Image (cartoon, rainbow, N blue to C red; front, top):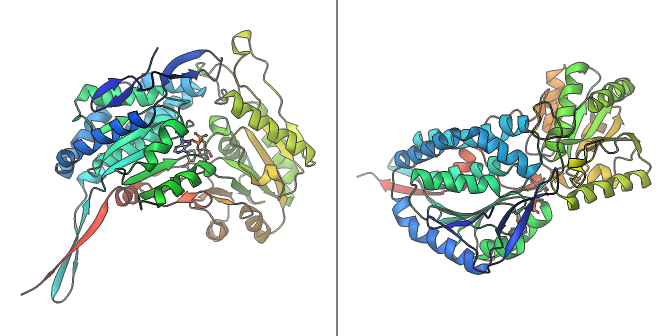
Length: 478
Ligand code: NAD
């Protein structure tokens, strides 16, 4: 199966004639070949987006919102196909691909259709003049996405970007091209005007980097690792492109003595290991107050060991494979580092799977205790099924540990004292904190991080703001 670029409404082969392999995380088998795009492919895609811009940006919000709804309708009819492709390409369990990836990909288009339909100019009256704030498209956008939530994150960018009148060039992760291709086929089938959405496949150096630095790109929305984000920011800065960066995290889950222990254990296992721990929001540092430390650990390890690992297409599977052999090696290296740093492995190792999975990227969920809160494993992003557990005594100590990393994306607090929960939440240096829950998403709220977790916010009206230029027109009264 060969996947193609989508440029100016046509599926096209790469200029280089070269292809990259897309491998199954679960079995190591070849799934597809994808274009190894280069500067020429990027130039063609940006040109197509630029050509389409005047016509597309002249549509009304209502007309563009109707297009988003058409995409949502068509995607919804492919719900099961999205889940199956996503599970195959990422190695994640099919149930998760259905509940999270397929569900949110459709929802993102519907949600932004509704927001854009309701968007009005803002009026600010002065005694002698009226200010009218209008929202204009920025231009051609570059949308770059990672492999952990492929269509979920791509649709999160495409919908508000084109909804606000921009045209775009997408560059999905080279490791998970299947649902990006499905989105292009969907867009093609509904007859979206050509050039409004274009897509180049390929790696970061060959396709991502020339896209970000292209002179006709006016905005860059990037989700990925912090070190890549830094390169993207440098490249975008010299020509003052509008920039949104959603980067890595090392999020703390703070568990107080007075929490509901049963619910907290379930919630913190989910937050530690959802998608094999490959979610930027995962709570990979678990801070437990002294009185319940031992009891929490016993219950937590039991719950972790009860998760079924294996065949991603099995409805009962909770944990699938890691994305690539390289990523598995990185996770294994961190476990070795933890041992050398004095950590105790409470549970971990490798799952016992059938022959079919012998070339896949498998590891069991790993829980590590006794590490210093400043150790590498407790402060660096591992992005896999590995959590570290630490004991704290006071509220202040919990806050200090939570804030003790270069990252500042998210966190969760577990307590029956909601006043304390809110007080502690306000002290955490992140963009988001959940109390007695995790990854409970309302698409209207701001999403993003501080420190090395990113720049800017997306979500709800923050997305509409990022994907547009606000302009004020002030009219003096007679
Ligand atoms: P990555 O940074 O390696 O790649 C992300 C994307 O950037 C890919 O499409 C890649 O091809 C492209 N890319 C690579 N080099 C580039 C360059 N020089 N210029 C332009 N594009 C380039 O990240 P990944 O391994 O795919 O994803 C995992 C990371 O993403 C983790 O750090 C995770 O925390 C982060 N993430 C963050 C969020 C968030 O919302 N904050 C969400 C999901 C994942």
